[in-house]
Length: 296
Image 1 (cartoon, rainbow, N blue to C red):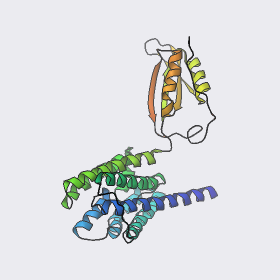
Image 2: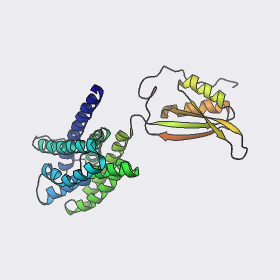
Image 3: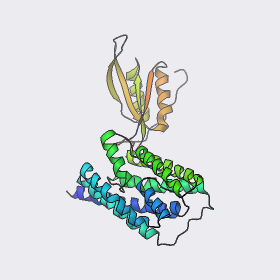
Image 4: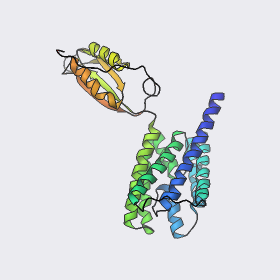
């Protein structure tokens, strides 16, 4: 019970911090440099430009029906966290707009757009990773992720493009193109943060010398391997398939070890987006570097 309560408190803190970071970038980078934004936040900026209403208020007004939809589909926890994220976003938008601060970037819109994407992506990624959203398109994106498997970043990028086209009603094509850079960086950062802790590579090795290869991999990389049982389609021969998960930096060494034993080995390398365990999310023993001796 205590662990659950501690987890909930941490999630709430990260959601609050994430919305603060997102709102900071929006006020001091997007709004200050006349760049647009995607999703519902982009709609609030359109309203601000055309009518003059503070986005801190329109964020709450527009998000009310979307939050109700999200509550019915996503469950109680997501519902409460969405309310938290939306309210915090409005509060921080109100606060940051009333604190006089200038970020001097020599009017370089490219740097501004990169930083704006990083701030928005990092802040939103913290919110998503801890089970929350900031309302608006985030709710729809999370529904698409849970129901259809679309990543949050890709869904939000589509919403952003639609809103950005509408943003041409108050900004020129040049600033709209820079805003597309913001949206692209934002989507990539969100995907990295929300996909998990540690990205790695999964390596599958098919060889007649699988036992020797497995022993060398374990000895020199200090990582465990898994044996999978396969059967050749043409030969009907039973084979031991070696599977190992390594970091990107270890791929060349893995290939070197395999080729030192069997140059004709079949190697399949795939992306692993989330890894937890020894050697990835906590320390593993020091290993020795594999070197190919002469004559081998």
